[in-house]
Amino acid sequence: MTILGSGTGAPSLKRAPSSVLVKVAGRLLLFDFGPGIMRRLIEEGYDYQALDAIFLSHFHPDHTLDLWAYLFATLDPTFSRGRPVTLVASRDFERLYETMQQAYGHNLTPPEGLLQLILLDQTRPNGPLEPPHLAGLKIQTAPASHKPESMAFRLEAEGVSLVYAGDTDWSEPLIELSHEADWLILEATRPEGQKINGHLTPGLAGQLAAEAGAKNLILTHFSSVYGRTNPRPAAEKEFPGRLVIAEDGLRLVLNNPDS
Image 1 (cartoon, rainbow, N blue to C red):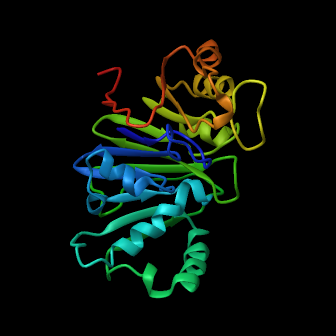
Image 2: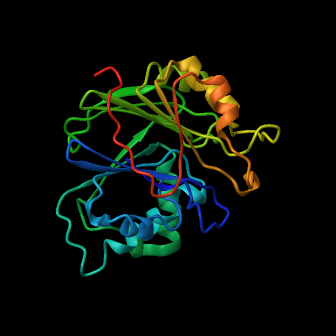
């Protein structure tokens, strides 16, 4: 796993908008695709043409803007990918895509057969799904508590489970989805004492992870208001497992702690 971005929508030289790249079962999977992530892929040594799947947790610009840049780039003469790319999002993505196509026309229409959409009902749990173009992967989703289209993803492959929540507040469906997950990636947008609706603090993220029985917790999506505030103490107070504080460029091998 590579943390491409550990920040929010506010411009920062230290933290790009939140995005995570996972390499598993011979596939490259991207979770959220905010502004600047195309460049971050190159900076970390990856070819954007190699992406096999894109997962969108919700549609805020800091999580989706470079999806449109990606689709535009597929029309470049140098684009040569011959395999489909699977995009997994809520069923509301169809309306968003139609709106963007009205604005940009054929510039957002990728080569025929490239984009395979899996659009799910975000109001209830889904799966496990085993998409035909993602052999060896099992995917489940559940509602997240942020925007109407928000959902979290659980990925299981090669004996390891990973949950990516995107932006969320406290969510019982997310806790159920994250039950005994090997790795749980949660946002911690604001420090303790500065909570806002639709988001977690480090302490709340630690509580949620502990409630779910997750083994490892990765905190990300840090806003600029943190300054020099360290999110670790508040999270460690609530979560007894291994805690990782995300930084742009951080790479981890996501193994099964019990193996």
